[in-house]
Length: 180
Image 1 (cartoon, rainbow, N blue to C red):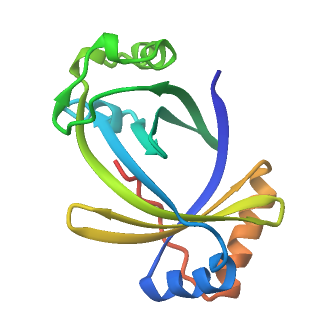
Image 2 (image 1 turned 60 degrees about the vertical axis):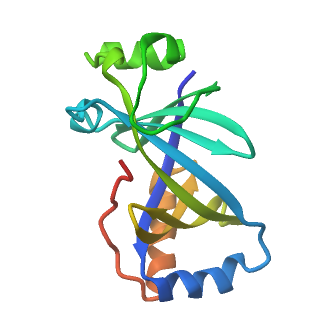
């Protein structure tokens, strides 16, 4: 069953990350995430504004297909257990039915999927005004980025609170970049 995720994201500078960490997350436990990204050689998922990844957390693997909606992201999730070598070609048999079905309805050939890259993230989470505030530091392709996320159940209220948070710390609103 798909889930609707409503979140707001903003890239941060290292200094902004440092400030928010010490303000909200200093006493929170760090999580280590490893994400493997999947697409076709022609980037068919990306061209259809879809993202497919496998996230490894505490030894468990969760495959997630993300599809944008007007006010949120529809997520299709299923636990998997794979050899996660990058550049590994995947097949129809590798994919959970819920994800295979969604890709086929979007005319994506599931036998063309390849695990093409990975990203590691150090994550901190804390409750914030009826939502979840998330601070990430990600490493990929020899670079790092910093990001703040705010996950909520009400889009309009969440957007206002997120914008107010950024404004109160004088953080410039930056366009969201998808990790794929």
